[in-house]
Image (cartoon, rainbow, N blue to C red; front, side):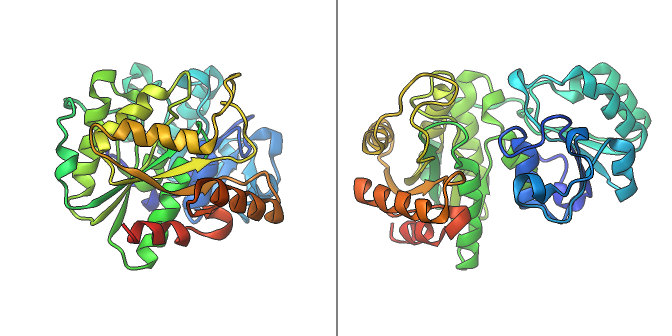
Amino acid sequence: MNYHLQPKSHKIAVLAEGSFGVLESKTATVLIRYLPDNIVAVIDSRNTGKDVSDIIDIGKGIPVVRNLSEAMQYDPTLLAIGIAPPGGELPPAWRSTIYEAIHSGLHIMSGLHHFLSEDVELVDLAEKHNVVLWDARKPPDNLPVATCLAADVDATVILTVGSDCRVGKMLSGIEITQAARKKSLNAEFCPTGQNGIMVWGWGIAIDAVISDFTAGAAEEIVLEGAKNHDLLIVEGQGSLVHPGYSGVTLSLLHGSMPDAMIFCHQPSRKQVARYTVPLPSLPDMIMQYEMLTNPIKPAKVIGVALNCFDLSERESYQAIDAVETETGLPATDVVKFGADKLVDAIQRL
């Protein structure tokens, strides 16, 4: 497992230079949503002087500052890379900010594919200043090929799946876990992506694992979570109909061997993001997931988590009603209306 830093024990400055926004800086937004008491500032010269909530509607009271020098006024102990640019590479212009942060004694938390802990210049500098470079996306060594061990755990395993990328699989997983805990269920969120790992403090970023071992990584996550918990909410990735990321979706489906699934979807989205691939109907996509689990370990979709961020409250309720009618399953927007309806579905298993 990937346990190097516990973000909840740090004061965090988030680097989102030139890209801070709901869609542009998913990592920054996730950290602000789930670690609001730890975030002391967001660095983005485009929006300097604003409050974070003016831009993404959450994080009231967190300032947006021009540069790291201004962020240091708020005494951070950690600098988080707040965006995931195409290809996961480190923007060259950001190196100077990371150098400055290390010189200032800040630990660095990154979800990039470019591993800072393998960047010789940064490693040498970090060693001189006793700073940790935590690559949340870096997988552990010696991951196994899956052997269906996840089928034998005592815990109930729920996997979030979806129609596309960025429809709320991680967010829904966290919200369901928190709602389950409020109902006194011994639940654990099992992160499989860098943003979930940054928030929760452990997990394996499946998309950085060699393909032969991705299902094995999912299995390892379930085995670890089941040691101390009765209910596991495993974070899904990608989509079965996504031309680029369907492989990791299938690996999670088979490696985690879920007892049931929660389907995540953005009602206003009609085709795969950045592609011209039209999305099938919800019943068809749900049937695809259930069909592919069947030979390994049968599992049903038991609820739908909708991402209605771009809809009004009235439109959101209309979308929920339409999905419940179309699928016959309980549906909700876990951010706007809570996750209790989906927890209730899990308890009925």
